[in-house]
Image (tube, rainbow, N blue to C red; front, side):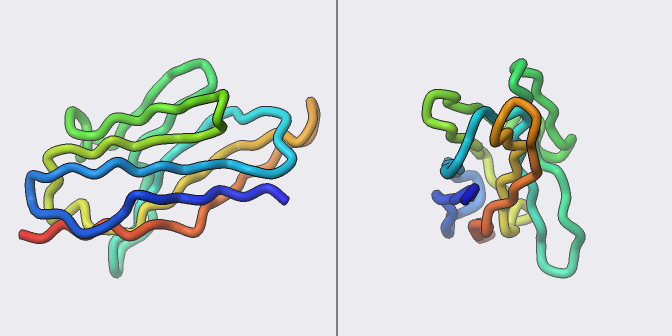
Length: 120
C-alpha cells in the first residue's frame, strides 16, 4: 500500500527554522513530481513548493528565499527546509507525490499532514 508519512513539524518562534520530511513507502516503481502543500485554519489548501523528477522547482511567492525543497530519490524522501519562519506560516503541511507502481500506472498520494506552529 502506497503511503506518505510526514515528520518534523512542531512549535517554533518567529525567525526560527524547521525541517520537514516526507517518506514514501509501499509498492513504488518511481516517483515523478513531489510537493508540499499547507492549509491554515479557515483557509484553502495551497501549494508551498514543488519539485519534479527533473529537479525543476516552484515556490509560492510567500516562501521564496526562505524555504527550500529537496529530495533524496534513493530514499524516496522529500524535504522542506523552512527558515525565517513567520506566524503566517502556521498551518498543517501536507506532502503530495505522483507515484508510479509500474511503468504505466501512477496515482496521486497525500500524506496525513504535520502541524507547524510559529509563535509571535
